[in-house]
Amino acid sequence: MTSKNDIYFSKEHEQVRRAVRDFVNKEINPYMDEWEEKSEAPLHELFGKMGDLGFLGIRYDPKYGGQGLDYWYELVFLEEMAHVKGFGIPTAVGVQTHMATPALHDYGSDFLKETYLKPAIAGKMVSAIAVTEPGAGSDVSALKTTARKQGDHYVLNGSKIYITNGVQADFLTLLARTSDDPGYHSFSLLVVPTDIPGFSVSRKLDKLGLRSSDTAELFFDSMRIPAANVIGKEGEGFIYQMQQFQHERFVILPAAYIAARDMIDMTVEHLRQRMVFGKPLIKKQVLRHRLAGWLTEIECMRQLTYHIVQMKTAGLDATREISMGKVYAARLLRKVADGCLQMYGGLGFMNEMLISRYYRDARIMSIGGGADEVMQDVIAKLEGY
Ligand SMILES: Cc1cc2nc3c(=O)[nH]c(=O)nc-3n(C[C@H](O)[C@H](O)[C@H](O)COP(=O)(O)OP(=O)(O)OC[C@H]3O[C@@H](n4cnc5c(N)ncnc54)[C@H](O)[C@@H]3O)c2cc1C
Image 1 (cartoon, helix red, strand yellow):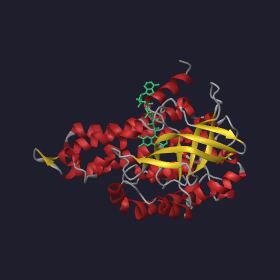
Image 2 (cartoon, rainbow, N blue to C red):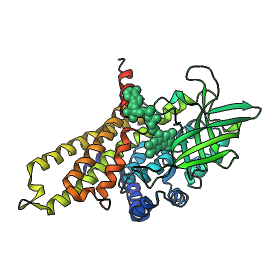
Image 3 (spheres, protein in one colour):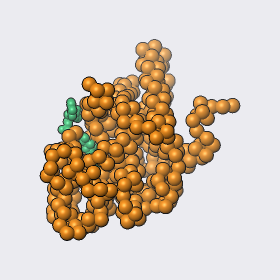
Image 4 (tube, protein in one colour):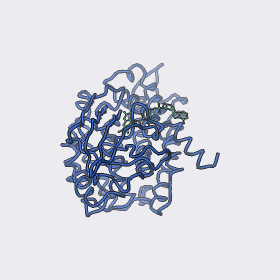
């Protein structure tokens, strides 16, 4: 019998799904409590295992170790990663696959791809994306870190904040100002190896959620970066980063409809056995209707995501749809996490309960990678308002 999944996914897609699911169940979920407690996961070890299985370069060029597969395989991977119990590890992995490497793959020289993309796909190097600064978050163009050309090097000075994987990264994909001219053509994306003198992790940051992913403040003191480490053309970094953001923002869409469903499933189990006023809580129509409302939104979220995959497969620009999807996904996750916690009662407020982790982790989704308001600005602008 044909299942709903068969409309979109082939047997081969399902094989990949099973492989990722097995990995999540065996190599990630059993360690989540420990990594949350430590506020860090062993990324070199974890990425090494994922690289061996071909998970870190699903869409990337086989010449550099990628699988060369289509957007549907990538979606299968993201859907299964969303079954991780908490968003810390999917975020750390997403940085490696969808935030720090897309521009390197699309615009990097052969030298850069051999030296950095290949080991990132193999899981031998950990990467981070370094855009945000203390004075420049939503307004990326306000960044002050400079890379000044001196012969065959750039001299890098400045700092970056809230950098995921920043404590463990072997290289950063970093956006810096390479010219003082106004406008968007004064920035460049550089690959910054963290073993060059002048690099330091000034602070490992203590966070409300995503505790299993490390987040750092970084400092650059006259680091000498080889000129060959510029991705694509000097001065085009801002444009590349705006494109790279589309991959980053897309990741949250499947995370939303999968993790929200997981939260609901686990909450329903609780509602079935929790007796209140002499009956299981699931018998309360107000709660059943609330659950049905969320399931409806989850289905909308899934269908928008599949539509975006079709657009991307057809080579269409999906900036408008991805921006809409990011706002919707973030709000859906926050709403479902909050609503499920409410249904658990006092138990849901206990740190030992997974729902409390989802509740803490979901909060960042409306802020990171472009806050809701920034996404709405993009949508309004594209509509000509
Ligand atoms: C856990 C975590 C991980 C992160 N990982 C990374 C990373 O790996 N690499 C990286 O470069 N950055 C990372 N960030 C940074 C993140 O992308 C920024 O925090 C985000 O872009 C918002 O920037 P900001 O914090 O400077 O907020 P601000 O720019 O100061 O904005 C504050 C608030 O103002 C509102 N706002 C902003 N713009 C508008 C507008 N146009 N209209 C109306 N309201 C608006 C929004 O509600 C926003 O939340 C991370 C952040 C966190 C917390």
